[in-house]
Length: 175
Image (cartoon, rainbow, N blue to C red; front, side):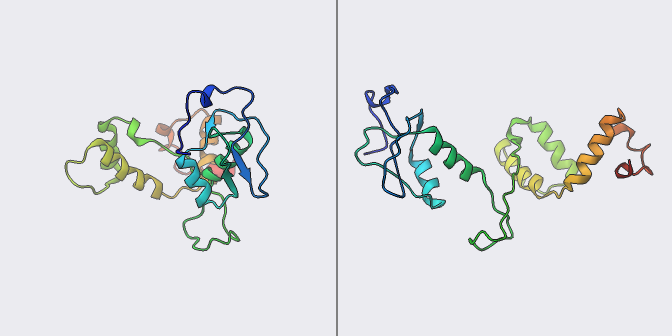
């Protein structure tokens, strides 16, 4: 099996079942969906030590929706940076939303760089600048409770960031 399927194998008929074998060496009997068990997915399964293998007798590489969900759930979990052990005892799943700075215009990236005084090399292209600024963006500490409280306060009171100067002595947490 080379990871590619033929036209006959990829028609997606109802007769195809999941190509994975679970840890108890029984082949999954769920119907195969359109997700394939490609090299990237195989790497994820190996890294996360999931007990899933492809059945050598399978004529396709399609997996069921159940296994697709299992694999996706382990892909989105992120461990805390300060945790060095793999025991999982103190690890928490951190759901970090991904912001794609590459979608912004170069002028916007330069304004961000200037505002936060981020040191970079001269003559970076857009992708390099976006990568550098993404590292900076991820390093900014945010107290989520304070940010959400302040946001809700501003929305409820129909205020904007321009009203912050007037709010100087008001404590939004003591609402």
